[in-house]
Length: 153
Image 1 (cartoon, one colour):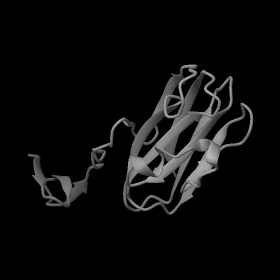
Image 2: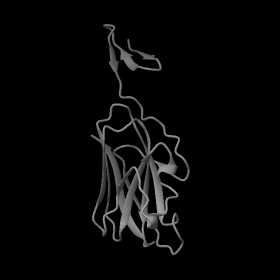
Image 3: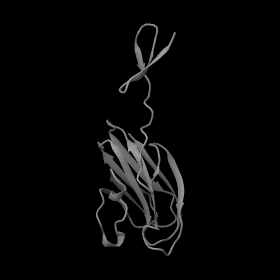
Image 4: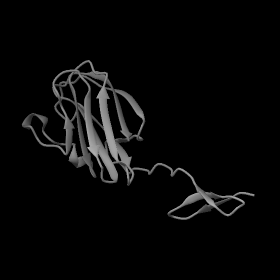
């Protein structure tokens, strides 16, 4: 006979011998600030930024990902571009990445904005638990497909 025991701290399966075998916790649901789209750690995102002559933030797209407590490292990579896209990351609020004038050389918590179409990468060692916001921006408004991924390791 198997029973499921649930508390706010532990979810497991009670076996006939009385031991609890922990289950993998469900991903923590993010309550992303608009206009960010929630993604999961390890999820490949294949998308695009459309070419535009409109000013920033029309040249950007946003995601958020929840990083659980105890994560050793988060690596975020942006690749597959045909134009210069940049990667900006902040913790806790969309305001940590959105609304900053890229041309003014503003500082971000984490960024990878190398010139050209090479992959961009941000590594966060011993990240604080919580919601991280990602901005992928085309500095000059050029359009491009891209692949983005955030992995824990």
